[in-house]
Amino acid sequence: MKTAVWYTSTFLVIFIYLYCYLVQFIRGAEIRPQLHLHQPLLRNRLGGAQPSSHMASLPPVIVGAPSHHLGWPSAGSSAGNQHPSLQRHLPPLPPPPPASVFSDYLTPGNMAVSSSISVSSSVSSAPVHPSVTAAPLTPATPKPLDFGYHNYDNMTAWLKHFSASNPDLTALYSIGKSVQGRELWVMVVSSSPFQHMKGKPDVKYVANIHGNEAVSREMALHLIEHLVKNYREDAYIRWLLDQTRIHILPSLNPDGFEVAREGTCTGGQGRYNARGFDLNRNFPDYFKQNTKRVQPETEAYKEWIAKIQFTLSAGLHAGALVASYPFDNTPNSVYQAFASTPSQTPDDDVFHHLATLYARNHATMYQGVACKPGSPSFPNGTTNGAAWYPLTGGAQDYSYVWTGTMEITVEMACCKYPPASELPVHWSEHRQALIRFVGEAHRGVRGFVTDGNGRPLENVAMKIKGRDAPFQTTKHGEYWRILLPGYYRIEAYKEGYEPVEDDFSVTDHHATQVNLTLFKQVDSKNGFGTLDDVSNYYSLSASDEQPNKRHPSISNKQVWVVNRLVTQKPLLCCVVTLISYFLSLVNSYVH
Image (cartoon, rainbow, N blue to C red):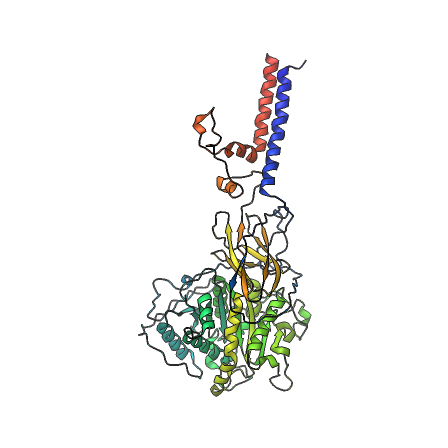
């Protein structure tokens, strides 16, 4: 006949076993109230709706800080809010680009406010380019930029002099060198030219990627001058430079420009780099493998946009009068040699708006007049790139797919290298559009992503629900996304953290700020590993209110420690209980 000790031990085993799992269930309920299943984002930038195998079953914590709005001057709007989705997934992409402060290019050894600045970034597949240090220039009011073409030497001299004369609003740096060793200069125009402004976006203009499309080069130089000279007189320009860092690259193909000829409207001399490569066909492509050998200019460009997370961009070309937007390529190779239907991105409504805004702010582009008989005309002055003519390896698609930058292409004139006498007309026609376009970086949603302790989280995969085009946070935890007015849901995912969603609305006259907090995931096997993990989810009770009278040595400790053992190691507790049960049986038979 079984003794009372046996029955007591059996009861204790069952009770403690059930208690262990009940505590674990209750703790899980405290951490995840009212949850629903969610598919986390992949780390790539497009096609990010598929769950990773070990994450698909984990429900998220819905966390979203209260939203508020930041005022900004309106630069136009457009109706429409469609959310197309890509039907294929990206191949593995390069590492996600962190945000970069200006120190990525400027170091204490070569940074000088009163002299010219030159720093070359190194590219992994190319030799490191040494910095070029010019003789110090005495700051002085530079002469107005003339309406003429500036070869490499003249352009370099003007950029250095202008930057040295305006150190409070400009900073000059090089992203690398061309095949023939010419610097690829970039001028930052901002009220904070040397340092990234947290929460404020970076925008870029890239001109003269085709060396013979020279009008774009001069428009970029005049834009630099105009922004700086009007900073104190023009309220909108002052607001732009206070809220934005504008990076202007006047010539990505300086070698090609040196051999191009003024007055040539359609010829190809100077279009390619010194090795005969078209730089706007030299980037990795989303739809088709690009087998062309990567050029130094392309490598420098890719390295540049991987270091600085640009929100908005425009490539400046010539040979037509139109604003073109992604995609430039099509998913079906059959149509890559012919004009086809539009190849739409998930953000087609936004891209159409950006192109339309530029065209409407240009003097004549919006009229959609053909450059010459037999050439295409573009209604409203805009076109989808692939609908015009598909191309593989374009910079526009690369910027969008690989870095999340919203980029369009602006064809600035029917003549690629018009006579210098026509430059004043082109500048007057493009000036307003170039300025207003930058302001669109402040449309949509912006914010910060932090962990449970308020620390910024870098490389968080962000996505607007219904748009398979993820983007990412900077090293400061910042993010930006251009959106049209409407209602949206933002999703955030980072490995090791619970996914987050939050609803928000976008209006036409200000950006919406949505700050998100991501909490660390709970290991379903081991529970909490550290006090920091626990404190991220719920408050801990100190033993001052519940002192341990039997063991004074652990008074003033936190009482969660006992429950933590049960929560973290339920199987261990069960094993210990079973051992105790076995020992009790032995004891009962012995006695």
